[in-house]
Amino acid sequence: MEARITQFFDRYIKGSYFPEMHITDIIEIIIIAFLVYQLMIWIKNTKAWMLLKGIVVLGVFILLAFVFQMHTILWLAKNSLTVLATVIIVVFQPELRRALEKLGERKFIAAVVPFESAKDKGRFSEATIDGIVEASYIMGRAKTGALIVVEQAIKLTEYESTGIRMDCIVSSQVLVNIFEHNTPLHDGAIIIRNDRIVSATCYLPLSDNMGLSKDLGTRHRAAVGMSEVSDALIIVVSEETGYVSVAQGGRLDRNISKEKLREYLEDIQNKKSESRSVLAKWKGRLSHEKKSDE
Ligand SMILES: Nc1ncnc2c1ncn2[C@@H]1O[C@H](COP(=O)(O)OP(=O)(O)OP(=O)(O)O)[C@@H](O)[C@H]1O
Image 1 (spheres, helix red, strand yellow):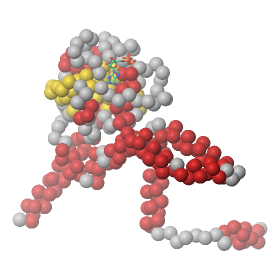
Image 2 (image 1 turned 120 degrees about the vertical axis):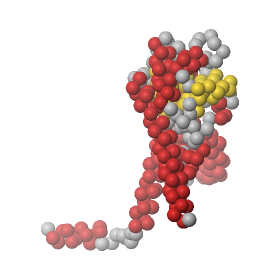
Image 3 (image 1 turned 60 degrees about the horizontal axis):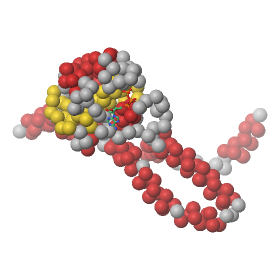
Image 4 (image 1 turned 90 degrees about the vertical axis):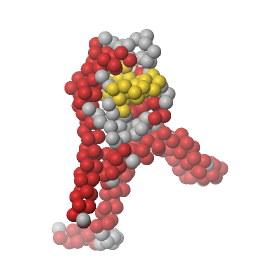
């Protein structure tokens, strides 16, 4: 038995090369694993998934061409590589932009650079949450369609400019009034920044996610589309069913309860107040240090 084990070690293990490992190598492996994992999630959630399948098919085709030594195909593949890379960048420009924006999102940056949230002077109050929740379910019961975008760290100025500019404190009465049928502001989406409605009748980008249910129309597609290109939380009230749904990060949570909607809103409210408190702590520490220097 012992001889067998020794023989196994001699044959398979002894000759193997084990490089020396340092702590930085382990950290490097963890970072690369994390990045690859994030990349795979990103590919799965965007149309890059279809592209990946296409690339695999193309790869197999090129491999066959290599095996059978088809020189013209190999020459074409080699020379179109740079063009292909440019095409990918152009086609996936929105997704790449979103991926980079995500890196700069406050929840990520705030952990490293606390003063990032210095721009965040607004307040997302309880009254705003109450107003949105109440209005959504009033409209749901009345089967009034609505599309409400709650802005977060990424500024939605370009979408704001597609609508009619407003400057109005959020309340359930105002929201219900805006989405009332046959009124000038009811079509399209409204954008809420902190406690104020800043624009109405906004046009949002439509999602081309093929996984979305076929019975969802453009209102829901616009909600998902907006959540794919920004970190905003989008509330949709269906005119057809009266259901209240939430789109966030490219996903649609359909027919949610009042409590769940409140949870979603409180979640983003807490994120805002968390980053403000980090800033407050940082400012406090700074002034304390200044005082002790004097
Ligand atoms: N790109 C867009 N941006 C903003 N609002 C949009 C957009 N596309 C559609 N809408 C809004 O959605 C309305 C049409 O909704 P539609 O019936 O097609 O969608 P739906 O998802 O089936 O919603 P519902 O369940 O309310 O019927 C339009 O009148 C408009 O107000």
